[in-house]
Length: 126
Image (cartoon, rainbow, N blue to C red; front, top):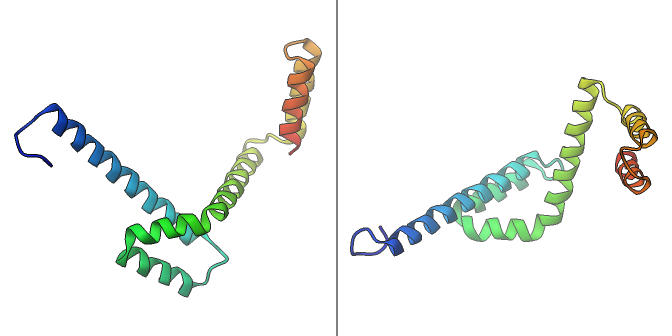
């Protein structure tokens, strides 16, 4: 326990907060490591330097990585999600043309409005 005095509601809340912060910290560390090792634009030496700094100064380095590489992490995450979605569609047999045909059928049957049709079609074509 963080505080003396045995078990109390305050100690419980503080301990819960500490555990939550540890889990969040561990999640950030895993996120940074996974992004770092999936990158193709950094050499092995660059990755090794990031890892050394992550081990020596973990808090400072994680925050520095998030600040300096945040937009790149987002772009790489979107790219990986798009690739995974396209791969699943290829294996399952769905294509954009199939989805557009289903969407046209929903519009003709009156199950969706013209505005919903336009929004969903825009999402599919992108």
